[in-house]
Image 1 (cartoon, rainbow, N blue to C red):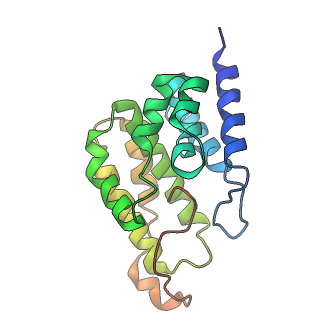
Image 2 (image 1 turned 60 degrees about the vertical axis):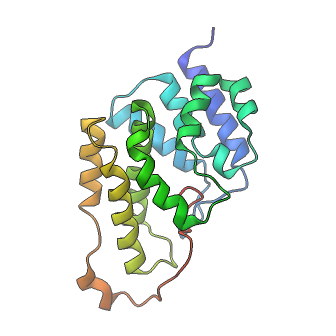
Length: 199
């Protein structure tokens, strides 16, 4: 029987291998694996969540959507319960970005409790990144739009974890405001949100 540390190491190694050629869209082009690691750190250290299936699914949450990983591969490697959580969190990659984002808002209320925890952690981490180190080609308007879209998604997750919801509200308070637009001289960028594979 594998211990929780071994299970998390296994999921981390798997995720790092699958995302090995992907980068975040910050100015430093950080390795993508930083993102799922931040999720797990937040879940454990700030939300006090220690459910091994939740933590493994957080590490793997973008593998089906953004890599060549298959459902069969996840089930064989991590079991059906972990795979089912990852499936709940995965967008349909064949849809246009705008449609995928609209469906995240629509489907948020349908997620299981554990999937909601991961989705909340994901949105917290992404807003923290946009607030502190936004993609260099994002206009201020685009940053504001992303904050507001994330709030719409989280609106459907309320009532699932008080601490995670408080952490989201805390980072949402760092939302940029329109009065700063004139000071922001970078042009608006239209199209899909590029900050990371997940955003």
